[in-house]
Image (tube, rainbow, N blue to C red; front, side, top):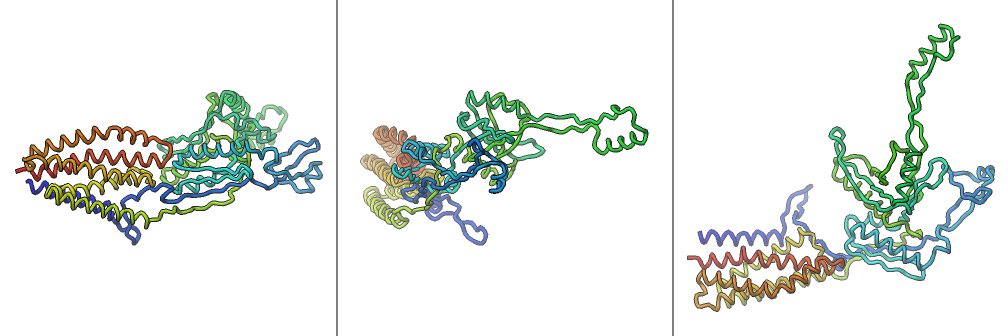
Length: 490
């Protein structure tokens, strides 16, 4: 039984080590792919996307009437049509000189920063050229990066206008907050619909209620009354009856004034309301109800991008994306491999010292130590810890702490005259745990604080150390201590 326990634990350590360092491969589409998750690297190790935004210098054409008021038309007018109507075409800059101020440059930077926070971008950096207004944004490279870039310079101008008169009924000043919601449809249709939920402030809620009462669908009765004409002949009555049947005598049609919702002057929808809206909330469906996971995630991404743009306010200046580049980190995989090799050599020397000083106990502890490192690296991958340079330092510190802890256990056991007895080993482990982790309390408090830091590099160190210290306590109690106890059993 003693041998079975020992062999089982050693085999378990070997399996964990094989999975962690070599992976688990399966055949997918005629190729072998590793199913073990890769490390989530921070920008200082993986590189980052650099986006340079420059102030738009282009002009746009507007049409003014005889009184100098801007005219909006649904269709593009030719020069002849403009002249016939007595209008005048003017070319004006998208960004007038009056708005190109340092205050607006800084406001734009703050709004972009707020959008990135809303989109939960972990680590980003924004710098601004106070002279030209150019903004340089650095964000991590991942699956959501392209979506972020496509919306980063969106002005975010929100308007609800009268579809016919083009009168602006509501704008960004009426918005309180914007978020994303989703809900399942009925069992018959199946699927989930994503909604953009726009909540308006007190003034905006009043406006929305008035608009929803004004721009509401109205049913008009179009019933044909043939009794009005008393002098029609039988033949005419027969004809009218036939026509009445063809046109559906009791038909109704819906008529309503309509509103148009626009974002950055692009029409999102034109509609009227089914009922009065009194709660100050407007929900817009993004896409159709779907059961497909990819489609649902795509709708969520689109809605989240739109929500972050509207919730942060509109940019005071229109910007263009001047450059969009992915720049690799100066630290390459080769550098990390060299560091891993150095750490491996130092550990090997440490294991040899264990074996020389503590004989069989040192050998078993070394085997268990390898299993701890392997499991530790798997935990870091599957808890989505973003590994930075500071995170690598945290891994090395954890390995050093575990070496000190194991050495303390072995030294405490070895100094006893009855070092091979089970009671002595149990007491030595208990004493080592108590002394080591009491001294570690200040470090544990600091590590937990680091975990909640907004700066990714610091939180990376905190998370890596948190899992490391937790693993030192649990793994050594379950595996290392058990192997030493089994060896001492008679």
